[in-house]
Length: 190
Picture 1 (tube, rainbow, N blue to C red):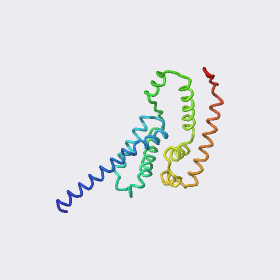
Picture 2: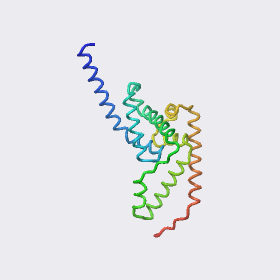
Picture 3: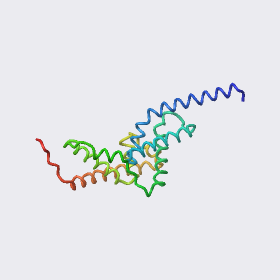
Picture 4: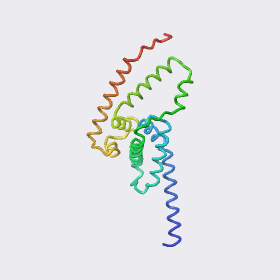
């Protein structure tokens, strides 16, 4: 291999890495949203996305075409998240800034109702099995097709459809139960 060939290969790899970095910047927000839906922790979601990008950079030769970039990144993040779940099975993480912000916010009736609804939804999502939560997040938050979810999770498409259907049913039931269990909020103004 001549020096000219080596230099040309080096510039080609550098150009490809720049292109990937630009694409990763565009995909960060979607991946973060998906990671947060899976783990419900802001810092853990950021770490998961960063680890996903690192793994993607290390194995960028596996990417066939940029058309499948979203699914490829989601697949990497899925595997990383499973690794983290196995490692941290005994620990429950808490984001201190979210706790502090919760107690320092000004109270208003509208914010309270919106917050209670959001919390109710998050709690209900957290109670779903990981498989159902994962499938619902992939289809509803990220907009992946059932076929893409099947490839990402390495499960048959019928199983994916079943997880989404049952997950949505369970989510609706849990939301109704939580709403019944809460005390009624009386509006201050009419």
